[in-house]
Image 1 (cartoon, rainbow, N blue to C red):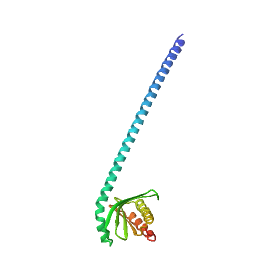
Image 2: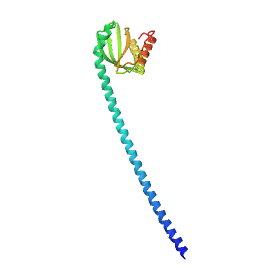
Image 3: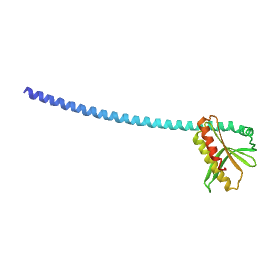
Image 4: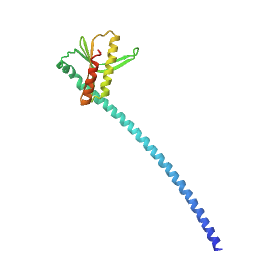
Length: 182
């Protein structure tokens, strides 16, 4: 009889342990789901903060770029006079020609009777900036041709920090562009 009672007691203990395990598994599952929700909320909050920070950095970069333009622009005419160029007019220009699909902005457009100097002003010019300015010059020449403007168009880029690789690339662009008249 003792064996039957022991077996019965063991069976009851197993059932009780099984119920405890089910309850523990249920509690663990609920905790994991809650933790998953918390992690998801934290990730979303972090993404929102990063987006807001990126927007603020972009605004700051634009403001700094604008500040550099305002610092450089007044001295451009004087600098070019030292290089033998005389300009009587200097301004920022934007072209929006929907009919011919020509859209461009020029930080500083220096002009005199026969020449136009389009100057791109950057804090730290990159090779991509130089390439973009070269393309901008081609669009500007196209726009000038469409409007009977036969002046000589020149391009320049200025920067606060101009590394050697960008200088070398800019000179290559200039020498390969000499055969084209902008």
